[in-house]
Amino acid sequence: MAQDFVQQFQRNIDIVSYRNSLATMKKKPTESFREYSIKGREQVTRVKPPMYDHELIDVFF
Image 1 (cartoon, one colour):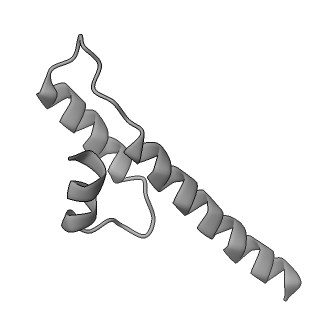
Image 2 (cartoon, rainbow, N blue to C red):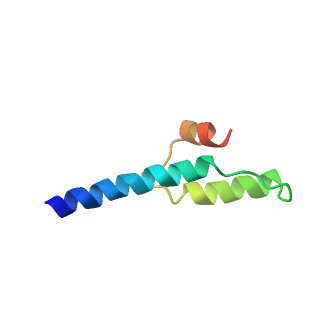
Image 3 (cartoon, one colour):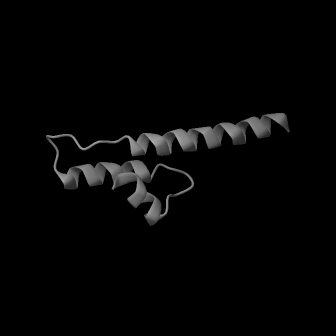
């Protein structure tokens, strides 16, 4: 039971840190906005549980 708790807690930490890393993504001067948005969308698909549209707007804009 303790291992289940630790696994669940670790998963929550991973989710939060991954969402924070999305917020720190920056558009490089050499990439177009389209390339930046595609890269961001690919990163968002890896977040579990999935992010809602209003969360995406808060992160990227």
